[in-house]
Length: 190
Image 1 (cartoon, helix red, strand yellow):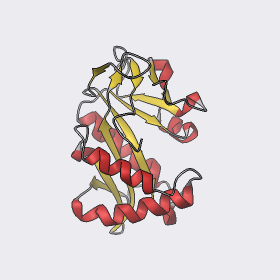
Image 2 (cartoon, rainbow, N blue to C red; image 1 turned 135 degrees about the horizontal axis):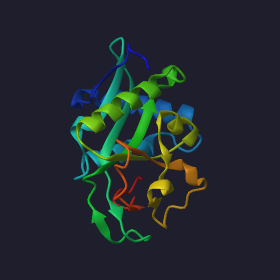
Image 3 (tube, one colour; image 1 turned 90 degrees about the horizontal axis):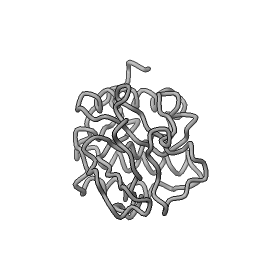
């Protein structure tokens, strides 16, 4: 983990830098997004009841913003079609999105952001984190396939690779009583 990276909550003053960072990160680092949908998702999360301001972060290096990530409350449904929300996201959070500035890819910034972010989630008393992404990366920081915990995507979101939906317990057994289906339909851009 890099010690020269400062992780702090985002502020309104950071928004322009975050937008620029996300556009470059996704357009240069992925083949599925130019970043505009990611920016729209962040705005939706910020405007929702699930937003947690103290868990929306930027990463700084030498005074420059080099990363952005956030955790938000995320409800689970007891039904596969996602129409029966039982848990309003009081116990778990969703990690999404995560972006590292394109000029800083493959320099340990993403790993540092996640490790420090996980510490903050623990401090706030959440039991677990869900994420959908590259399991090769997230498994390195302790995430496991979500189906091992009885947590699945809703039927409207078929995964091409089931290992891409993952969870991380904040302590052993933390997710033993939390089961259901992840509901994405509260966000148009999810």
